[in-house]
Picture 1: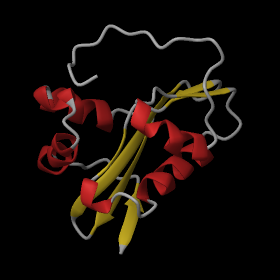
Picture 2: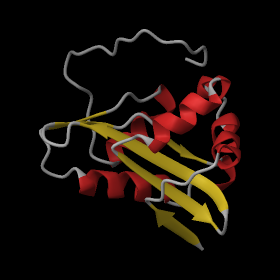
Picture 3: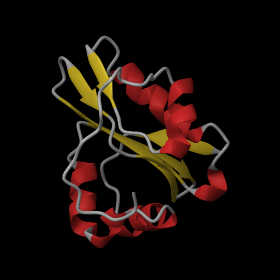
Picture 4: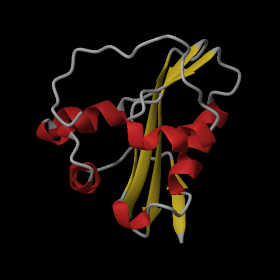
Length: 134
């Protein structure tokens, strides 16, 4: 049975396999990744016993804007509604805020549309990025 938590005691040994399974470049900066997650405005994790199988986080000013930078589910656990549950919990926490934002890779667009997101008009995502997986 999958349980969801807002706990902040995630160990690097729990976090890294999830990110490595998705080839995220943040694994090259493991301590920074861990601190970024632990210092997020919100952090929701999904557990199968003591195994971390999913997580999502939010960065927010708490009044107008929330940004959802990470949502990952272990490949063996995808398609079970875990990502949807994490996103629903995050969106409920920030209900009423003026703007909910995220950047979606092409393969994730349909998922986020099911969560209520739409393309942001004529805007274009821009960044200075130190990764190589996109």
